[in-house]
Length: 591
Image 1 (tube, helix red, strand yellow):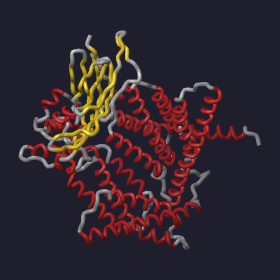
Image 2 (cartoon, one colour):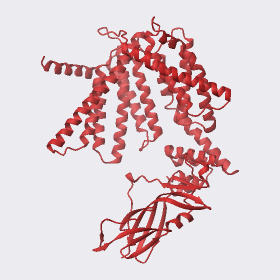
Image 3 (cartoon, helix red, strand yellow):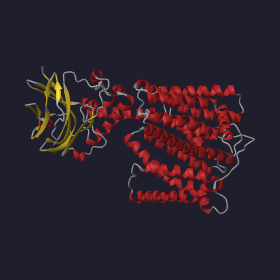
Image 4 (tube, one colour):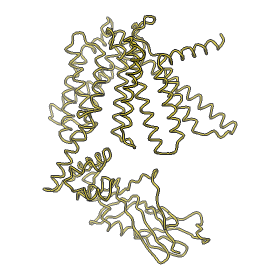
C-alpha cells in the first residue's frame, strides 16, 4: 500500500475535526502562538500578559468542547452555539485578566478549580439535553479517558523523536540551532497536535451512524479487580483501625488524616465508576461486594473527616486549603447519601455535583477566597486587640506571623490597615510593601516562621535575607568591586583587578573577630562577630527575613559595605556566636 491514501485519510480526519470544532481549533492556535511568543520574549510585563492569554485559552478550549457537545446533542443552530460559547468565553477571559500582574498562589488555585470544573462539564454536557442512558454515559467517558491517554502517548513519542532529530542535526552538522526550538516544538505538539488528535476521537452523544454501545475492556476489569480494589481495601482497613484507636484512646485525629480519607474516598469512587457496568454480573463476587458495601463503609470515615477538618477550622480559621477540604467533605457526604437513598442512582450525579461544587467555590461571598480572606482578617483583628492586654506566647506569635504572611502575600499590606487599629498607618505611609517581618516588628512582635521551634529560642539563632535577585537591579554607585565572604573561609582573588590603571591584589584572612580584608598592603579589620553579637536585628528567628542588615566601615583609603545575606549560630550566655555566614562585601576606593 502506498502512503498517499494514509496521508489523505489523516488530512480528511483533520479537516472533519476542524469543521466540527472550529472555535476549539482557533483557540488552540491562539494559545500556541502566545506560548511561542512567551518563550521568545524577554520582557517580564509581556510575559505576564502572554501567560494570562494562555490561561484564558486553556479555559476557553475546554468550555468550547462542552458547548459543542451540548448544542450538538440539542441540535441547536450554530449561531446560538457560537453566541453562547463566545459570551461565556468572555467571562472566562475576564476572570483570568482580573488576576494581579504577578499571579498569586491563590489565583492559581482558583484557575485550577475552574479548569477542573470545566473538564468535568465535558463529561456530561452532551447528555444534558437528551434522555439519559447509563451505559452510553459510561462508554462516552471511557472513550474520552482512553483518548487522553492515547493523545498523551503519541505526543510524548513525537516530541522525543523530533527533539532527537534536531539534536542530531545540531551536533552532526554544527548548525548552532537556537535551543529555544525545543520549547517551540513542545508547545506546538501540546497545543496543536495533542489538541487536534484528542478532538478527532471525541464521540458524539447522539450519533445514529456511530451509536455509543457498551464495550468493557477485559484489561480494565483485571486491573480494577486484582490491583485497584485490593489496594483500596487495605487503606480502608488502616483507616478503620485508626478510627477505632481514636475512639478507644479519646485522642484527636492528626491533621493529615483528612487528606488520606479524601484520597481514599475519591479513589474508591473512581474504582466504583470503573467497575459499575459489570459490578453485578455473575462471577464478579469481589466487585459486587465492593459495589454494595463501599458507601456504607464510607460513613464512619466521613465522621472522622468532618471531625478532623472542623477541629482545625475551629482552631485556626479558614484557609483556601481547609475550605476545599471541607467542601470536598460536604460533596462526599452528599454523594454517599445519594447512592444509599436513591433506588436507581445515576453515575452522572458524581461529575455534575463535583462541577457545581467547584463553580460554587470560585466567585461570590461563599467562595473560597472570600471566606478564607475574611476569616483570617477576623483572626488578625482579634490578635491586634489581644496585644493591648497581654503578651503573646511563642505559639500565638507564630500563628499571627502566618496570618500576616498569608494576607500580605495574597492581598497586599493595605488590606490589613482597617483591622490594625491604626498601628500600621505610619509604616504604610513610608513603605507600601514592607514585608511580613517589618509588619510584625511595628506591632512590637517577632516574626516566627512555621518551621521555628520554641526549643530553639534560647540556644540558636538564624538569619536569612530573602532577595529576589532575578528581577532586581542593584545600585552599586560609589563602590568599585564586590566579593563574597564565608565563615571559616578566606578569600583570595585568582586575578588582578585593575582600576584607573592601578593594580589591586585582594584577599581575606580569617580572624577571631571575623576577617581581615587585605587590599595590596592595606589591612581592613572586619569585626563581623562583634557586629552580630550587638546588632538586635539578628534575632532568634529571622529566617526568610525582609529586613536588610548592613555594616559600614570607612577608612582613609576605602569605604566598605558588608551586606549580610545569611548568618546562623548558637546563643551562649545571652550572646550570639556565629557558626556560619555569607556576606556580600562592596568596596569603594577613595580617589
